[in-house]
Image (cartoon, rainbow, N blue to C red; front, top):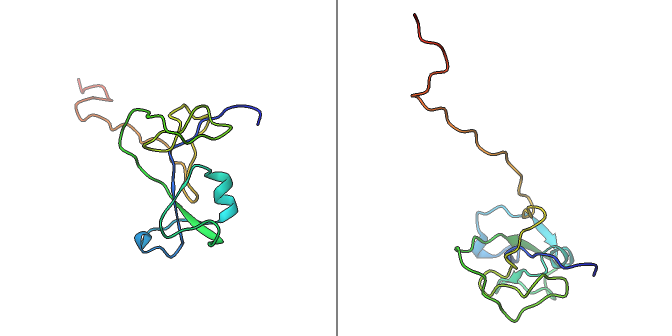
Length: 122
C-alpha cells in the first residue's frame, strides 16, 4: 500500500432477498466487488460472503458520536476503526455514495417574502 486512507462509516451487507429490506431498492453487487468497495462492511445475519455470490449494501445512518478506538484495523487505514460506526472519522477525499445513489445539487435558498426585489412605485 502506498499510503494511509480514511474509511467511511461501515455499511451493512444483506442477501438480496432479506426480509428486512422488503420494499427498499438497493443495487446488487457481486460479493467480490462488495469486499473491494466496502472492506469494513458488516454482514447482516442473512448474508455470508462464502455462501452468497451477490449481496446488497445498506447505508447506515449512525447517531452522532465521538471516535471510540476499537481493536479492528486495516493495513491502509489511518487509524483503527471506530467501535460505534466502523469508520476512521477522518476527512474523506471524496464523497462515497452507495450503489444506485445519485448526487443532487444543494437546495436553493428560499426568497424571503419581506425582501423587495423591485423598486417601489413612486
